[in-house]
Length: 144
Image 1 (cartoon, helix red, strand yellow):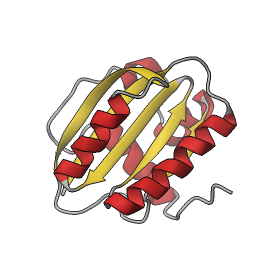
Image 2: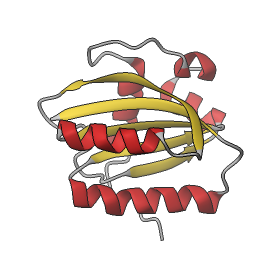
Image 3: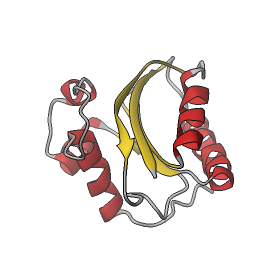
C-alpha cells in the first residue's frame, strides 16, 4: 500500500458547485481504481491524500498535476504504509475556513502549514491533521 499527500493552489475561486463536482467525480473514479483518501479545500488551497496501490496513486497524481483548475502542486510526503488511513472513504471531502482549520488543528499559521517541508515518516503535521479529521468524521460524506 502506498500514500501521497500534496498541496496546490486553486486557479481562480472555485464555486461550491465546482468543488462538490470535483469530490463526486473523484469518489466514483477512486472506487473504480481502489484509491481512498480525502480532499480538503481551505482558503484557495487544496490539500489531498491519496492511498492505494502505488501505480494507481502515482497515475492519479500525474493526472491531477495536469489539471488546469489548480497550480503549484507540491508533494509534501509519500511512501509505503502497512494499512490505509482512510479506508472508508473513496474520497472524503471538506471545505474549511481559517477558523475551522484552527479549531481542528490548533494551528494558526495556515501558510506555514502549507509550506511544511517534505519528510519521509508518518509524523508529518499534514498527515497528523488529516488523520485527526478522519477519526472525528469517519463516515462517507453524502454529496447529494
